[in-house]
Image 1 (cartoon, rainbow over the protein chains, first blue to last red):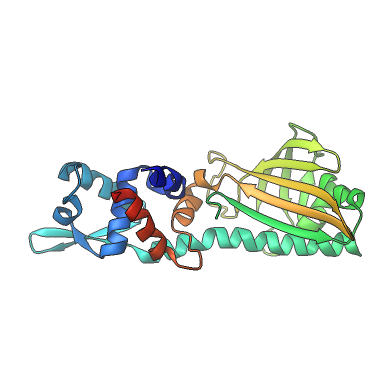
Image 2: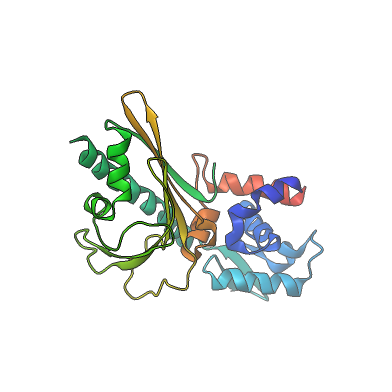
Length: 106
Length: 149
């Protein structure tokens, strides 16, 4: 579990380790039902549902009804969009520093 | 890979005193950063800022100065990328920006870091799924192994 402790901050978006694990499972295994997501975990189905609702609220996953069950899927559009945020800030620094260079070297 | 910070390092062909002035003097800072600043950079000071960047003139915000160590370090807190006029950023956590200066052969090495993104709502998702060269799917698989270990 030491690895998880180190990786924890990376996933602070997910608030806690259960949600982190859920996203990891959806990422690695594709869309899945709650039954599959609950399998092998000691977290109750009810708790998993709650966590999925939190993730859905953040736009990270969405549920699709398939027959009697709801299948949960990662929302990659939202992830892609979110990814751009830090890149934008990073680029903004690049151009600011290019202007600083010009300013002090001239 | 840092999970929480952006770091930039450049060597400027200018003496340390010159670089320091360009960073620590609010007026000079505003010139190259493209911001109009009301106030001066002193520890604890809150400086009102307005962007002068073409297309972003509507952007205003506060910069709170933390440390001023002449020719070595200037740090402040602000709201990163707070450019949406419809959003009130004042309740959100700030990031810490640090400018560190070091004398090197041929000039001054400047290291800029902006940290604290883990607590910024918009950045949190981004940081959590930030891709490195291997892509986030790979990263997540790695995490999954940690989780299930």
